[in-house]
Image (cartoon, rainbow, N blue to C red; front, side, top):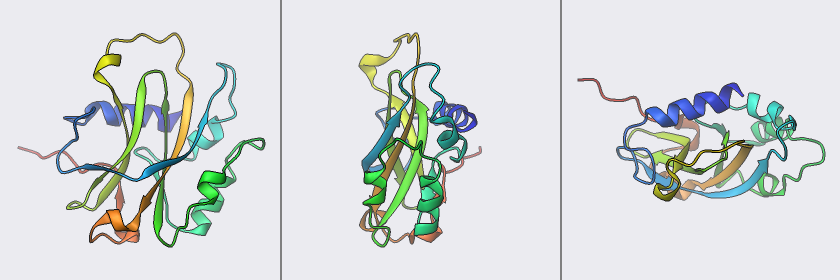
Length: 164
């Protein structure tokens, strides 16, 4: 839950967030897996959520992926994450309250930063939700989309806001 709140707070403070992109960021990758809370008293995803960093967790190697897979509920499928070739992709995993939010991964090539981001489509603004299920999603970002950045040099999270 900590990472959910941090991710939501982080997203809400990024200027230009939403369908528009902040600063020099661009959308990258594709969603390869998702787990969604089924009921309000379903806490099976809490362990996954607690293991994630605000702004998303980067999985760069087998050890990182294996550690993440240990947090997945026993009856859940993780074939999308398992099937990603980490020699040519970076996995970015994040979580959020799914009510009307959409998810994506953003990359600022110049700043060498990559992060999990959520936004609200214009038509969903102002929607009130009685309950917002926790969603944990995994995105694969091909190394070819990273530009000149080496995966191990990427910094998770958006660039700091400029100071005046």
